[in-house]
Image (tube, rainbow, N blue to C red; front, top):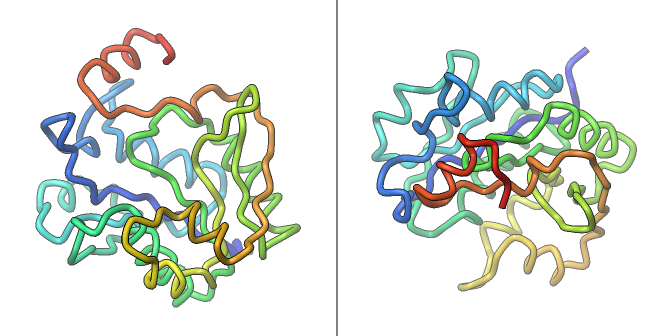
Length: 199
């Protein structure tokens, strides 16, 4: 049976601090893009939509064949614009919610995604986020109906700001997965990931 949700992987960032596309970095013998897409799919959340910059042919060429590209014509507008595009694409497929994963968080476990998807199935109108030792991490499950509000985000607003302004309920779920906090932004972060260290 088809899941009521989809996966949305945000991979349209400029990777300015890394100096090269983070989607194409490798850990454990595969690219970050492959790792994050596989984690979402392995949790039973399909299809997996990947938001990529319109001018990043090397990332588009590296997409796993089971993934669906969603080009962002204005990636400079930031993560909120990519989230809005991904949610809109999922909404057009009739999905009620989407697991929004970040390509620079490759250490998240499939069990975490599965738990969030289960919680979203029980309460599809809320945003669901994982926590580890009290700290919020990624990915998040977001109702696809919020796509229009994210498109209309005010300058400087992040997704969390939009949810707060709209009064959207945000549910936190404790998980035993330190990977939800592992964000790879710099070459030093990548070295830590590869050496098994945590921030």
